[in-house]
Image 1 (cartoon, rainbow, N blue to C red):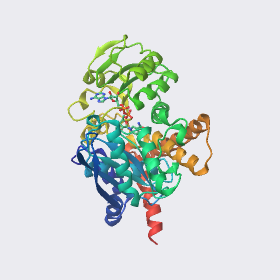
Image 2: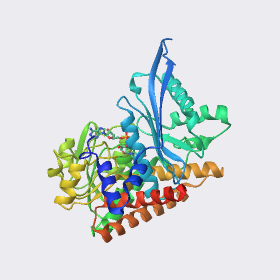
Image 3: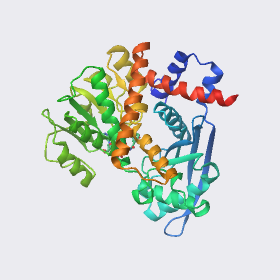
Image 4: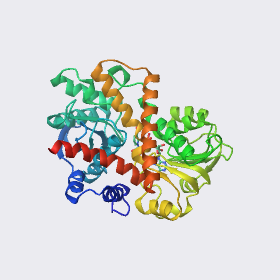
Length: 411
Ligand code: NAD
């Protein structure tokens, strides 16, 4: 990804300049602390030996243990993991939770392997990264193609040698120390950010028009909560295509349909549209909640919303963001703020594991609400004060906090 298309590196450069950080500090904060590449040998079900490559990148731990998910995907490589680990340092800092940033991944396509093979790969990987992780050192979590089952294997593998340690990973099932409210957390955080943006930009939330690309974990829960706030969700899509109803889709029924079928395909309501048509619908809030680079130079001019709320990681490329914000003054609520609800409740899960005390769902939701509102308000104040974008402001708040902790620790 070049710096013109990578919103994160462009935002980092802008923010460190505005913060007036010296080059040596800016460089030190950008370079990851540690990168580990591991070879994972395992047996296929037919007895043949096979091997895959895994990574764990620990970007920065000035403010607390490294924190970030582990993804299974054939596109995983060290550069992608490094960039996602860096993003985690800024995200945890922005929400002011006592973590640094890390990320991991294994370069393989899990759809080509059986569940028992994936279990063997997962356990081997966790053993391979054991020397650099720990409950106060580095706490992995789920990401693309990993889930609570994979977290259970990780936790079991670690506990075999270190004793019962649920806090070594987050995103676990409830039975093994997972947190109430985790499944809905990222969508809930997205809805809260949308609500706060409506208030700050003077848009009436009730009956406002919302379009959501991606109806997976994040998109479907965001739709559910925004619908509860009174918004009209006029368009949604997934990999199969989109649905449009100018009067608002029946989100409660669609949510249940999608939860059961894992797709919106076949839902008998609304007009079928393509993903490209969906992105250009006239609306108040456009929420890309599927893929990176969904809004890019080629479709930025057709975007027809008042505010973009980035629920996915990196859904608006750097050059598209320039077109939207610099040329058309369409605000973008950046990913490190919008989708931080997930890592925030992961943090709550870890705290509950350390305390060996379970919180109610209501406790979790109230604490999440407060964290999201505080972070949004801090970012918005700085944005107004300095007349900058929400993204630059978010990065400034996040980098400043990491820099302060980092500098104090250098003595
Ligand atoms: P998911 O796999 O549950 O859902 C992804 C959705 O996107 C699905 O509905 C899928 O059909 C749709 N999709 C895939 N390709 C598409 C395409 N070409 N066009 C339109 N839709 C397409 O994933 P998720 O957990 O909801 O994550 C969505 C995004 O949010 C990702 O970028 C992820 O990195 C980010 N994110 C997720 C979390 C979390 O807690 N789940 C936290 C932070 C960030």
